[in-house]
Image (cartoon, rainbow, N blue to C red; front, top):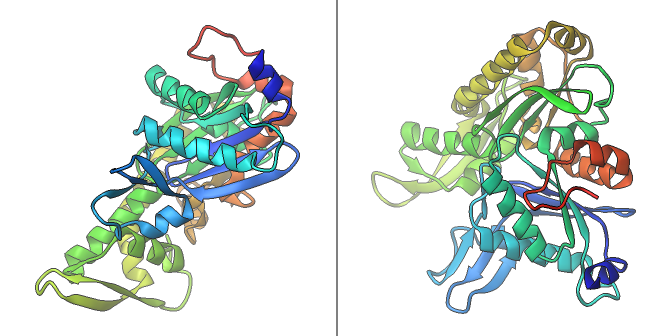
Length: 350
């Protein structure tokens, strides 16, 4: 009863709980939080030092007693306590200007396709312990397709490829359900590691993942798009142990990323091969939609289109596609009932 009372003064929230970023959508307001899924904790006091952007700035720069960590790995909760603290921080932040002392929002949150029941329960428990009165889980590609405004309720083949931070999920959706799918652990984080390893192997330079990620975002591409572009990278020379700066070209970064991009394309082809021919015909006509941070890799849409012979387009604002999908579900109770994943608790969706 108290939950219901406090719920009247709480916001309904849609959450995209990602390996790289966590986004929160508030019903009637839109996206209000878009922060890295990173938390800094003082291990002496067990208190949160920083969350989100401020915690990301601390990565690799903290003293031993301050631990900066990502509580999600490859799209699933790997550190339950830190995930709970991070979500509580964000939920409380949303309700700072509200009357209620104890926010009890209803939350719609995405989970990966191949999530186990134990992992599902970990997500539900983390959100409940963070202050939610009810948690409704939806499959990530379904939320992404809704955010990309695809007609998932119709008997039409919709193909969406979500290249996130920890996972790439490829799905064909029709009649509010996933028909065929593939889930890969190769995504944005793996691409960043590819660059770090390439620089180490070719230049004998040890650089941090933040440096590699910055280079990936600034000059990374999947196909040659124009004139040669170069950028400096700074790190530690593995031969001398001293600081060193090098210049790398977009072609070298493309070479570093090539292996991961090829695996994603191979799995898109494999998913198409397993899809019923009637749906493949729809996809050939309507095309493939890309979303997630990996969709921003320059030229990846052109390369996928060339390799599959299917039109490819990037969703509008691909970084927020999933959270916009969860937000749309807050406004459509009937659709939410149809696509919600059964709870690990005994309570049915209501």
